[in-house]
Length: 99
Image 1: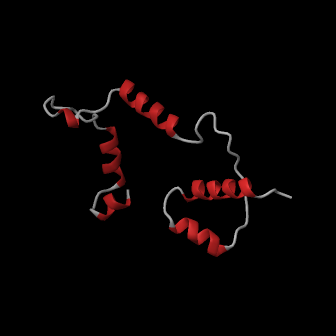
Image 2 (image 1 turned 180 degrees about the vertical axis):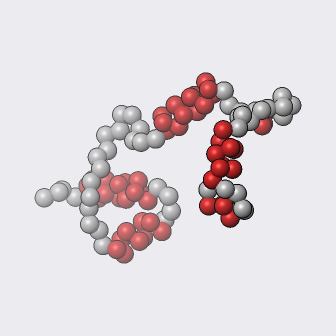
């Protein structure tokens, strides 16, 4: 709306645009074809399946306080640093007995 007003359009111009007929595809360029309702629903469903924790995961979310320098080293190693930190802790447990 603000961008439209900056170009000199009024609120009624935006209302006219919203009330206008939807985009009409010319039938030539398949890349410009609007999605059908079924295609849109399938895309939404696929997106929702990707979100969240994977099914069957036995991991638990927790809050922990760590020294900044330790955290900085793991974060500097790039994406997957939490997985690497988990592996380091698991490796430590193999050689030590938690008390």
